[in-house]
Amino acid sequence: MKGTATLVVSVQRFEDGVGIRLLGDLHVTRVGRVVALPASRRTRALLGYLVATGSPHTRSHLCDLLWEGPDDPRAALRWSLTKLRPVVNDGSVLRVGADRERVQFIAHGAHVDVDQVASLLPEGPTGAALQSLELAATLLLRGEFLDGLDLPRCYRFHHWCMAERERIANLRRQVLDALIDRLKNDAERALPYVRALVAADPLSEAAHAMLVRILAEGGRAREAEAHYMYARDLLQRELAAPLNGELQRCALEWDAGGRGLAESICSTSIAPGGDAPSHSPLVGHYAARRKIDELLRSIAEPSKRPMLMFLGEPGIGKTRLLNMLADNAAAAGARVISARCFEAEMVRPYGIWVDALRGVPPSLVPQSSRLALSVNRHRRSPRRRMEAVLGSLGPWRTLSTKLRVSGRWSSYSMTFNGLTKAQPRCCIL
Image (cartoon, rainbow, N blue to C red; front, side):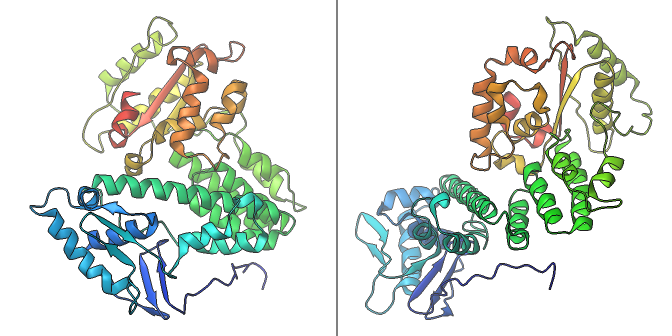
């Protein structure tokens, strides 16, 4: 049936022996039956850590990893190992090996999903066969690595888990990219992988643009138009920054005939340099408005780089004042770079800076910085992307010079909404 393309790929079900899934919820099966796991989250985290690393660890390291603080962490470790042995051991096969100093998980024929992914992609996604890519994608799309076992109070384990999730997420994007490229001439078959790419990175304009393109190529002009409208509103609302044009460019390449996709998008898009939708009139806040006017009068002076911070309880109009500052700065000829913080910024390295610099139109970015700022570089984590941006822009005192083009803007303004939700290092920067 048209429009119901699904991922139909057979994956080994581990009906023989022991199977361990680390992608999604931690899951152990024996001869096809689910094995009950210990209720303790730290004990389950220990199992995930031992299986994922597959190497011996000293007992002191494991205690520091998960039990730093209890009166007798070694006793807690012994108790957890006692609970784990019947879960993974099988008859005479002992998979949790331990002596007085070290503990190690030894597979002994147990099937582990992350190991299966590695065996499917020995030379990376670009060198894998199509069937191997589909099998790897099916495994990788099961969920986050050790979902639900973050344990932020166990900071050593938490940071290891976050790093593994970032590595798996990068691999997932690479596999999806490779699949979409291999299936670029088969829109129906590529569609579920493009949707998965959008789900994996919902704030990527490149991913949304790819989905619009695939829908249009598959003859689904109405769906392509609907997703374009949805993606445009989502990105402008969540990123609080202008789009780089990739979404609109890909949509304009396709026209289904009559009042098709291209015509519809042209009739609803804001032209470059056009006026953005105006906000409702601001009432009150006279002292703050005078301060904003003073700041805007001095912003063009090279010797001054003023900063305003709006503080107060929720609902008193801080966001409205920030919008007023951005609108007035743009009306005065300044280039406005904006971004918005969310709770997720606490675990997304330099996320607000990455989002802010994504909003800079490509025409304003020097050639040396375009690679670093590219939003379709799925293989780069936000932290690596930010490091590349900083390296290419050089000292921050030259940022305004690098963003100017032929004197079109005499100054720039950066606005951040909800900065208290950002990482401390983001605020320091």
